Length: 165
Image (cartoon, rainbow, N blue to C red):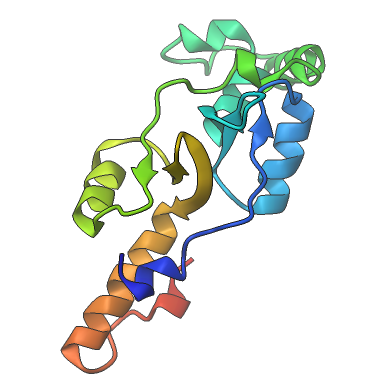
């Protein structure tokens, strides 16, 4: 792996335990500023991802998943607030995404790009022996590619990595 990409790997991010509550997961997503967090079992093995999408699904009334249009519903905030009170203390295991992409420690940049292009993940866990050791955010991957392109060109790119969100 290239140094310009290695420096964007997020190490030391504590995974969620599959028994952690939705409340704890929401708190941690906010603190870590990540779209997804890895979920591990009792042995520290990766068993899923829990992120913003899963949080919204958990906090929303179940009927929203089958509707294509909800503009006609008048009590929307009350319904979401009612559902949220029911699920905040449930374990993330009930809502986590069980299908997800991972990368090995020695991943290639092209493999990484392919996963970000085809998987709907904002974060890809880097795993070693089934355990998450680092995370790579899609936005950081983009920053690293811009930096590499600017270096190869021998100058500044039109958009610097610092200007990206």
